[in-house]
Structures are given as structure tokens and as C-alpha cells.
Image (cartoon, rainbow, N blue to C red):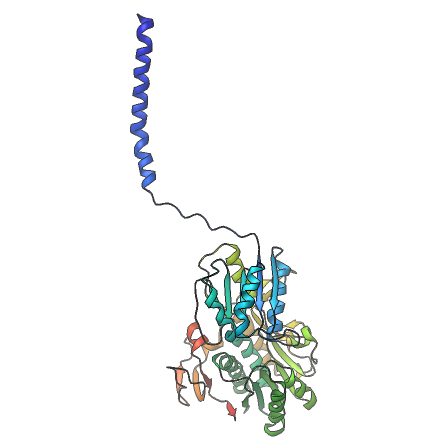
Length: 423
């Protein structure tokens, strides 16, 4: 009997265990099924290719030269990233070249000027896994993977202005410029404010003259303007918002000081020397490109779409050098050491100390010339749709008030008071 009934009792016990187990487990299973599915973590890319479409030739230019150097520095630092490029790309070639580059493996495609970079937005939706980028002139159009970028060059230009304002002996400073645009006007204003601060500190009367050539790269026209500024307006300091070397050539020939833009023209290109070049500012586009690259490598599907980085942002190069986005530079030296040894004795100590102080403050993110200064209109500039040029003498922004990035990038359309625009 025991042998007959034992198997029966064991079976009943097993059923009881199973039933009790189901009572405990089923609610947990049902609860787990009711939870929303978690998003899979973004996949980290193994490597990529940075492709830059340069609007001009690279050799002998400061703008495209700086972008090309940036691409090289990115590739030197990141073993898993390549750099490729195309030169002299106009708006009609932007998209065809971009698609060729993408077919060859490009994962980030940059247009290094706004007029030829904007067409990239037309193919951004087609290539969802590619980041596209375009320099900002005044348009701020973005898409999820169409990124706009520009450095706060005005910060370094302000420091250049302090040096120029202290260095001039005739009291006349000339700017050979491209054409009225938000980008050009904003940068010039940074320089002008620096000149005016130096003049006020030193009790000097300084005149600033601007004459437009009509485009970025017009060597004969730029030369003619530089010669006119020296011969007719007695300027003893020339600078430029154009891209050819003609204004520098005139400075050498006429024996006046030159203030450079975009790159350390003496140290990188060997153009002239520190007997003519008082200082330059150097732009490190690689800081902005690295920001984009790191987001792409991390698989970020919604990257930051407007990058406006300044002296308090930097990149550590392959050799360990920490490079702010922009800085004053000359003959491979930075900071106050970038001031020409021939010019330095002519600049009062209080200006040299102020240059050093303001540079340190901007690198630390503690001070900015566009926040600290009032913006009083000169009555000249570029009328935009819906944004007329403010009347001469009108205070558009009070001192101590921080303008928005959007306003600086797209609406700062007037010269600050105290500059003469020549016809």
C-alpha cells in the first residue's frame, strides 16, 4: 500500500509547488512586460572621416589655410579619424562633392564658408548618419544633423585693438575690408573697441578708417585700398578683413605696422617678420571640429547645432599643447610674448598689462568685451530685412549686458561709434 500511494502523494506535492510558483512568478512577469522598453544605448563609432570643402585654394590663404591645418591636427590626434578635402568649391559643387566624399567614407562634411556651405542642408535628411556643418555669416538655419559654427574671433581682435591703439603714432589706423556683413562688422567692432579702450587709457585721439574691396580675395583692389590708406589718410597701422597678402605687402613697402588675421602669418607661413607684423590672431577651427567629432564618435543623434566657441574653450593637440579656440599669436609665440619685440618698447606698460589681464580673463570665462561695452551705433553698417541700421548715436546695448549668441551671429549689423567708412 505504501508503495502504491507514495507516487500519488509525490505527484500532488509537485503540483502544489508548481501552482504556488506560478502565483508568485506570474505577477512579476506581467509587471515586467508592462514596463516601457528601454532605448538601446547609442552605439559608439569606431572611427570616421572629416571632409572639408574649402571655398578657396588652401596654399597662401589664412582662412582656408587655418581650416586645413585644423583638419590635419584632428587626424594627427585621432588615429581612427582621417581628413580629406576639396578646394575651390562653389555653391554649385557643394552637394556633388559632398556626395562623392560620403561615398568614399566621409562621416562629417564641412562647408568652410556660408555661401557654399548652406546647400549641405539639402542633403542632411538623405544621409541621416552623417554630420554636416557650415560656417555662419548671418544665417542660422540648422537641422538635426546640420550644424552651424563660428569662433569668437572678436575676443582676440579686441586684444589686437589694444595693441594697435597703443602702437599708432600718427593716430590713424586703416582696415582693408571685404564687404559689409554681420560676420565682418562683428569682427571689426571687436578690434575697434580695443583701439578705443587703449586710446582712452593713453589720452590719445585715434581715427579708424575702413574701406571695402567688395569681396574676400581681390589682391589688386586690396593693394589699392592699403596704398590709399597710407598715402591719403596717413595710417601707420594696417589690418584687414580680407584674405590676400596684398595689405601686408603694402605695409612692408611703406614701412608701417601690420596686424594679422586668422593665422600666425609669420610663424606658420613665414610671411614678413616681426619688424612689420606687430601681432596676429590665430584661429583654431580644430576646437570646433573636435566638439563635433566627439559627439559623432559617441553616436549622438541630436548634436549641438550652433557652436560659438571662444577663448575659454580649447583642444589639447597630439603633442600635448592646449590651444584656445582663438588667441593672439606671432612668430610661434602666444599671449603678450606674441607682441613684436620691435613694437613692444613702443607700447606703454599699462597696455601690455591690460592685454595680459584681459586675455587671462577671457580664457577663464570671466570677461568679454561685448558684454562689458555699450554698443553705440555709428549710423553705418548693413541693413537687414526687418533689422534697419540703428541711427548714429543710438545705444543699442548697455554696458554690462550680455548679448545673445543669436543676436551677435545674425543681427549685429552696425558699426560701433567712432569709425569712418570710406567710399
